[in-house]
Length: 103
Image (cartoon, rainbow, N blue to C red; front, side, top):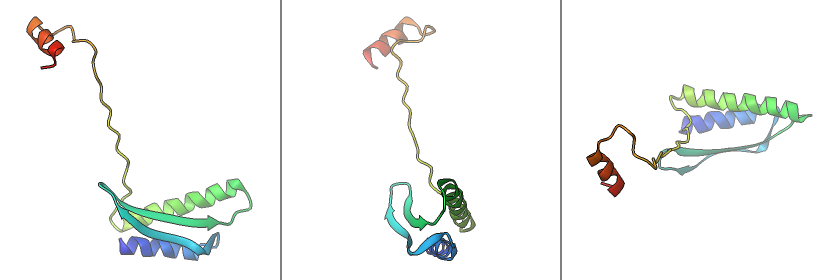
């Protein structure tokens, strides 16, 4: 983690588009399935389109820094539960009665 943070900080410090005085990368918490890092920087750009391009390059470099350290960003998980209101037609009478009673 220290290497990742140091390399992100170096990236922000050396990029001419980033206001380095307030730029930061901090390890802010340990989640149940993640280690959370906050990255903050003001980006100098003459237009919104150029800002987006600079932001994209910074984010891609941060991904590369994480990968080179042997880590990756956590992907949020989503659980979907499907509930049937009716019993499938292939079940016998006993199974239908059991399913209807909740057993």
